[in-house]
Length: 484
Image 1 (spheres, one colour):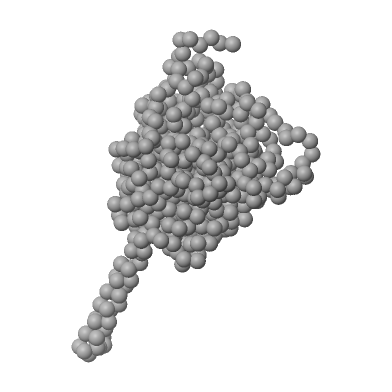
Image 2 (cartoon, rainbow, N blue to C red):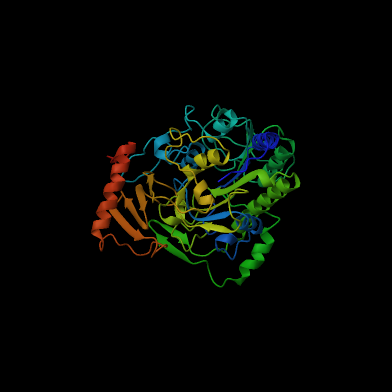
């Protein structure tokens, strides 16, 4: 059969056209800017503190809108139930045990318990490579505002990859409080009565307005809110005081170890501090829209540990249906509100139930930026991009927490593991272990360690093997301890 072939001049013209289209596509791809990143990290915000996570007392319309435009994670975990270790894990993609920051810096050193204080690092080691350093080396402009809490002067954000540092230093709680005159060595107040969160928001928006347009950027806003001291946000507290009148009787509490857990969200001062964060998120998202940046900016929202629920006489928030809060290895202490909006990647309003952890942010940001993975660095994290695209996880992961310290929440040294739906917690102070099935019992109310000794033994062995492999520092007996 004879096959028709176009004349030579037609074939040449088609070939030239295809070449032109191909070059045009390559040029368009090359001209497409790498995405910007805005990372909101809230301090001590509880899993249930947001409207989109079920709170009916707190009101967070701007954060709820962010969740509606991206993906909400229902099982997003912090690497530790306290702040500094989780912050280090976000920065490095490495487990707190690996970077030797396993307690808040500098930690509590006056315990009278069974075990001696475990010495860990009081800063993020200079030889660690941060996500800010990696992005900076790839032509990103990097901006930090808020709480650092990863080392003294000489190891602040500008020594760890950030071009600009507004308010980040060694302290974990805002020195001088939230209203000026505060005592922040890298943030001078403009006038008396200035509110810290508003100022950090203004500085962040100023960066968006003035950043180097020739470079993509990372804006990392680490709020001091909602950490103690609980000081009301004056613009919002009256509303919550009025709203609290719906509650009858005293706030219910429940014993947890040597402390008490708050069992209802009804604190107007705390609610107003949550509202201050929501106002800030809204202002920055509005700025992204106004500056035509939103369509090429990935927005990440997270908290460094659970809400402060359990202390000697109850904390300021409640994490129900999760148990306990900051400082504890129950779900209320480590499960966080987590939202990612990645334009062109995430489906608006999507929800992911797959467990993930704070070490995952480093490889995820690299992937979204079109940069190669660096598994020798973010060795404990995995890219979340397949999940953001709506794909099913390829394999189940096991998660480990190691918190061998005493904490003001009345927590005593311990460790935990989540393997599938199973969660095991070891309490070293009284040689106790608890086992839960999170699918059936997300509130961790029914200890199955005695009724399922096989699973208990399996998870204890798996946790021990991980601690041995990671060379985790284990509690040592205190020779001066007197029981009772």
